[in-house]
Length: 110
Image (tube, rainbow, N blue to C red; front, side, top):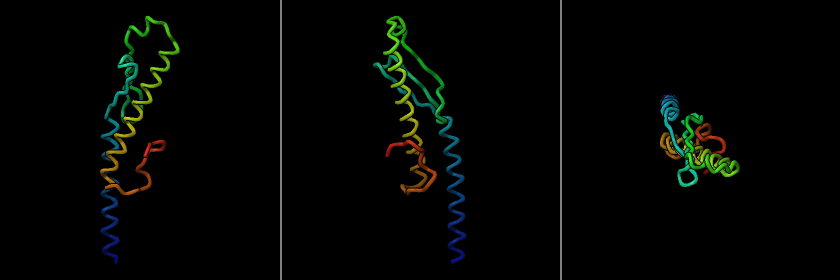
């Protein structure tokens, strides 16, 4: 029984190390969400930080503030969803589909 516990502890420690490695890798990843048929693009990293926003010049010329705000908001939300899905997928591989506390991100779908 003690041998099984020791083996289980080693496996858990390995999983923790693998999880930290994956989290570091995800932090370096970038995903882009777009709206308005690509007229607005927002890029975020795996730390959920916005790193780039591109707005097509035509939108600025139209001077429709509310539409631009809506498009930026939609693009940000799409990028956040992609980042959350990426994290869930990568961490899910590590967990092998097990429901392990601390692997899911708050607000994530599914």
